[in-house]
Amino acid sequence: MENELTLLIGKGEKILYAGKPDKRCFIFECIFNPLLPFALVWGLFDMFFIGAAFSSDKADEAAFFLVPFMALHMMPVWLYLGGALLSFRRYRNTAYIVTDKAIYASGGIFARTYKSKPFAELSHVDLHRGIFDQWFGVGDIITTSAQANPATLNGRRRSTNAGISIDSIANYAEVYKLVKQLQEDIYTDVMYPNDLRPKENHGYKSKYMG
Image (tube, rainbow, N blue to C red; front, side, top):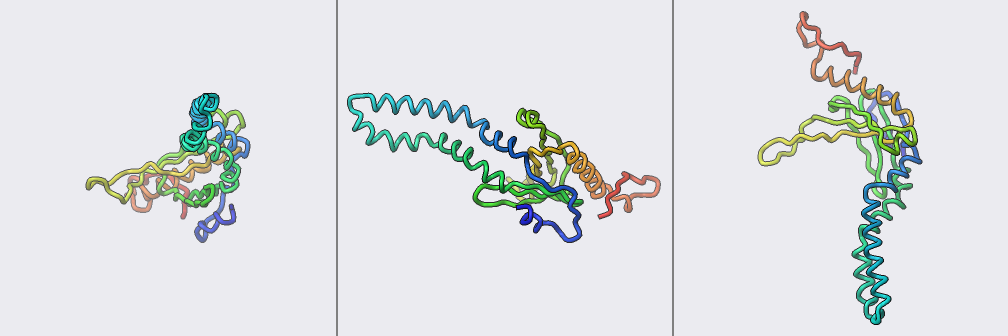
C-alpha cells in the first residue's frame, strides 16, 4: 500500500516520514466506536420482539412475516458488525507519508482512496489523543485547511476545513513537530514571501527553499 501511495509523490520531493497506524489502537477504535451502544440497544430491542413472537401460539405465521422484516429492521446492527469485521482490511489499506512539500494518506475498505494535501494549503496543525490513544501510547495529528472551495452556494464561495489527518501513530510527538514546522515555514512563505517584502520589513524567517 505504501508503494502505491508513493506514486502520488512529485518529482524531487523528499520523504521525511512513512508509516501506518498502531494496529491495536486502530482495531479497538473501529470496534468500540459510538455506534456500539446504539447497535447493542437496537439489537436487544429487536431480539426481544423476535423471541416474544416465536413464543406465541402463532409462531409459524409470525416467522413468515417477522423474520424478513426484522432482518431489514436490524440494519444498524449489521452495519456495525460489518464495520467491525472489516476493520482489519481497512487497517491494511491505511498508510501515511510526509514529504518536504505535502502529506499523503491512503485508506478505504473495498475501494482504495489516495489523497494528498500540500503544506501551502494547511492553516493549522493540531495534536489529538483520545482515550484509546492514551491507552496505547499513540496520537493523532489533525490538519485543517482554510483554502476556499471553488464550489459556490447561493452565489457565495464556500470555505472548507477539510485537511488531512495522521491517526494513531506511535511517534506522534516527533511527527507533529515535523508537520508543524513544515506547515509554518511553507504557509509563511506563501502568505509573506520574504523576497517580495520591503527592505525595512524583512517579514518572517523561513527556511523553506522549495
